Length: 337
Image (cartoon, rainbow, N blue to C red):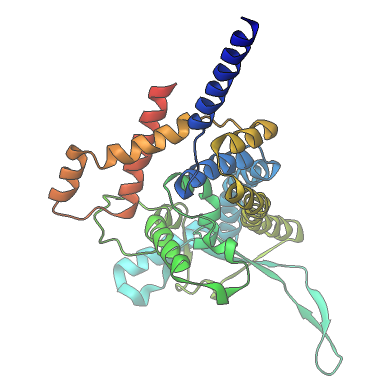
């Protein structure tokens, strides 16, 4: 009787082991990509570099509002409002011959304290340093400033910092990412059917302007300021550069981790191996994310959705497809919670 029970127990245990083996989820490229994204979100959200990026943006925003007041005071000190009004009245009466005014968001602030140098003959010469203050924004700054927002749209906000200084590595993937960022921010073609009606480029370009006396050539106007004011504007420019640098530091930090992670995931055959790693690192990783991903793919190409895609007169853009996919994925995740 004991032998029979022992044999039955052994058979039962082997059956459980076989069932457990059958239940193990085998990984493929798509599932590894989903898992890697979960790890990346964890690495970013829990990184001090992400907080530094957030803080850099906050500091810049605060200084930008101060800069508007300071530059207005400086410009109006050199070009009083009554002089601007006089030229505008002359314009109204005599046209362009009445004087020149320009609505500008670009200013050169010059240090009134000279820096002593020597000319080619060794003679002392005075040079005046200046700093270029722009209230519009260049693409690389806006890409860094709106990095989280851009990534949430399914676009690659890191395409340029990933390249570093190695421009020889620019490839079709790079140019495709660049084109998508250009379109989203407002530098690209606006003839697409995405329905986007406002762009960050326009918002920043029109956020702050002053009427100045002179032409559209910003560098033709130098507004002299005392050394303290000049140094403040230099620090404002540093705050702008810090946003870009914080973005680069964040990417470098997370990318190093992701390179190691992806190598590890390639060696993993089963989900439970990735789950074990996640548990050790404090990453929340559940099988439901894979189920949601599979359900999302099925939902996108369900008969109803596929019929809509096939009957659309206008082809959907990549951004629209990504937005649909993310919405369905979120709905699937909500249903699992």
